[in-house]
Image 1 (cartoon, protein in one colour):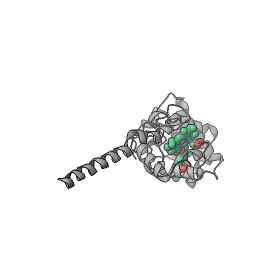
Image 2: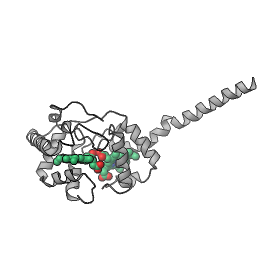
Image 3: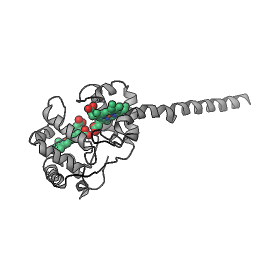
Image 4: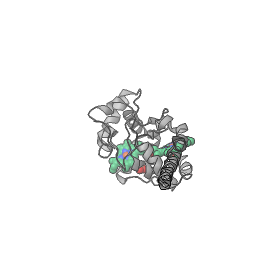
Length: 203
Ligand code: HEC
Ligand code: HEC
């Protein structure tokens, strides 16, 4: 009789410990620290903050490590990422990476977006496939990402080329483009034009 009861007790205890560690309150604090800037649940509501929900989890994790080790330029994220251990960054990557990507399309200058579409097919489609909807462990999605953020990143890649580790091909291509071209590209990624001939995003 006794061993049986002990067994049940142990099970109960294990369940309680499990519940404690997986309790949503415990995890929520880890993720909700990001919502103030990146929007509720990681879907950005502003033009200048990127959405982080639905990024490929390996891209997410590598990016957080790059911020943490100052291998990727940042205004804020370097400091934030240094506050976490690798295991926590991994949990965040799994949490945000298991959500669907929610791109946001908005009002754009159509002529500019059209020009952006041409630039995109010539210079960017090779890697940012499906009109920028594509993503994988190395490539972030561009279609539907906050447009002010994208514009800032492109400008930053171009001017701070040496400080921003990036595929050499991308640097080569961005160097050829004017400020106006970069605006056109960011208008394109925020437009419905990206949906033409582009099946849904992949991770
Ligand atoms: C105070 C505002 C702020 C907070 C809080 C914040 N971020 Fe950021 N995040 C930014 C900004 C700004 C950028 C653009 C890079 C930069 O300039 O630092 C960014 C960029 C990112 C990117 C890169 C997105 C991409 O498309 O490559 C990821 C991933 C990210 N943040 C994750 C997080 C996570 C996870 C948290 C919570 C632990 C968090 N951020 C909290 C402001 C913030
Ligand atoms: C050779 C492949 C390649 C080409 C060509 C390329 N990119 Fe990229 N792009 C990448 C990769 C890989 C990353 C992720 C870099 C990182 O991890 O820091 C990236 C990142 C970006 C980002 C940052 C997105 C974010 O969420 O932070 C922007 C914006 C971008 N690319 C725009 C462009 C544009 C516009 C073009 C064409 C003019 C272009 N890229 C051409 C591979 C490429």
